[in-house]
Length: 277
Image (tube, rainbow, N blue to C red):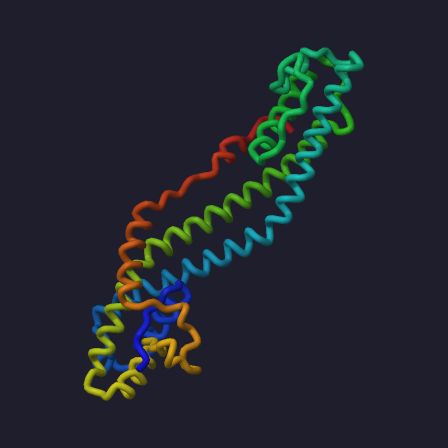
C-alpha cells in the first residue's frame, strides 16, 4: 500500500506549490479541495519562493562563469605588483633609489622582502600602497619613475582585478541573500504543504483508497511505495520525507532561519577609492 511522502527538497517543494496553484486556477473556488485561506497563503508565498530559487541559481551560475575571469585578473595583478616591488629593490641595490624610499610603499627602510600576496586582501592592500607610494616618492624625492613595470601599468592590472573582485562580491551577496530568504521561507512552506495536503485528503475522504490517491495526486500529493512494494511508480522517493521528518525539518529550519547571519567579506573594506590617475 503506497503512503504519502512530503517534499524534502526545494525543487520538490516548488513542484508541490505549482501543482496546487495550477489546479486552483482550473477549478471553481467552491470545488477546490483545500480552503480559500490556504489558497490565499499559496498565492502569496509560491511566486516569491520561486523567484528566490531562480535568483539563487542564476547568481551561482554567474559566479561560476566569472570565477575563471577573476582568477586570471588576480594572477596578473599579483605578478605585476610583485615585479614592481622586485624592481624597487633592484634599484635600491644599485643605489639608484635610497632605501628610505621603501617607507612610501608601507615597507620598512631596511626590509627587502617582497610583500605577501597570497590573498585577495593582500593584493588589494599592497596594490594601493604601490600606486600611492610611487606618486608620493616622485613628488617628494624626485628622480625617475620605476619601470618594467611602471606604476601606471600596474594600476591598469590592479583596477581590472578590483573590478572583477567587486563584481564577484555582488554575485556572492545576491546568492547569500536568496539562500537566506529560502531558508526563512522553507519552514513556512513545509507547514503550508502539510496543511494543504491534509485538507486535500480530507476533501476526498469519501472515495475509496485508490480513487482518493488518484484524486489527491492531481493536486500534487505524492504517494510512494514501500521498499518491498516499490515499482515503477516510486521514482522520486529521495525528494520526499515522511510527515514526522517534515515536522522535525520545520523546527530545524525555524532555528536555522533565526541564526542566519549575513557577513560581508572584510576584504572589501580595503578596496577603497584613491585619488590620482
